[in-house]
Image 1 (cartoon, rainbow, N blue to C red):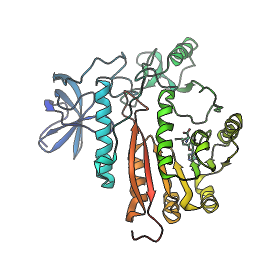
Image 2 (cartoon, helix red, strand yellow; image 1 turned 120 degrees about the horizontal axis):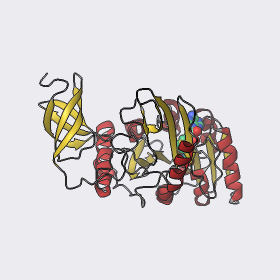
Image 3 (cartoon, helix red, strand yellow; image 1 turned 180 degrees about the vertical axis):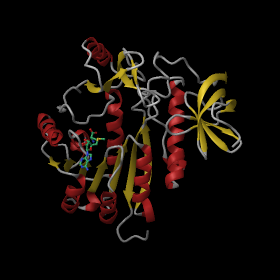
Image 4 (tube, helix red, strand yellow; image 1 turned 90 degrees about the vertical axis):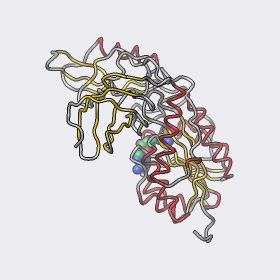
Length: 382
Ligand SMILES: C[S@@+](CC[C@H](N)C(=O)[O-])C[C@H]1O[C@@H](n2cnc3c(N)ncnc32)[C@H](O)[C@@H]1O
């Protein structure tokens, strides 16, 4: 082993890995370092040593990247929420595009050109409409910490504001702090209700309102390009995509297992006078077989917007055997998305026509992606 725990060394950062850490090398050993940028020369201290890689703490930037900027938030580096505030916003977009293209190339052998440039968020700070505040009794400090999980994942960073949260949520953080919960760990979800949507307290809604029009425009563009007339909106939440796209198809159905979200979806559709859709409270795995029989495959587009863990293998297998004309896969977790796209496109059953990333989560390691998949004609060689 060329290095030891606690060693101080100087590294060149050659890349930013998925998740935000910089990649440097000591001989062939990869060293991951947070809060750095490609091209930088940095001094680090080794904090973790494994057989195939090491982790290090940034001690000092020796040669800074021209893309390095002053982080806006005073908790940056300690709080676990953000990874990229030290990089200009334009550079963040380029980094995310490269990471997604790398991932798709590595996991699915998809050509890099299939991944489009990332659509930026018009408000790269103050955009998050939902945050989770935690409390934790800090024994040594004899103090209740109220804030977010720290970068080290073990403790709560005590904070009074969040630079990426909507301003109204920052007022609510102060209200939570003014009436602190008793000792011990609690979690409080603070959220801004979207205008004109009914969303039950614990149901999902996209957590950046500012980029929602672009997200809908992207999905609408893909749907329009296939010309599908039926839409199956899987993992539909409060009916967001089905309702936004209702006028583009003759009939649609949404499926979601959160019963309260489905009730809200029906209210959201009724409030807009939408009558060409139905909402089914069920697991996708249970409801999909009947829906794929109801709508003719050649005329059907299926939206998949699963949780971070991705789709069930049986759901992907059913799509492979029934071959709806189009699958539009929406995901906030490009790694599970790449895994699932790999399954859908195996043996040429579906072709990946394009991937549009959107920066729904500026300053953080996360990105939203929308993928457009088209089915090979039934009976065609694959
Ligand atoms: C990422 S959210 C997408 C919601 C919606 N498409 C939107 O844009 O607001 C995923 C949704 O899938 C639901 N869900 C998770 N697993 C499910 C399953 N097996 N069957 C049905 N719904 C599921 C969750 O309750 C959540 O509402």
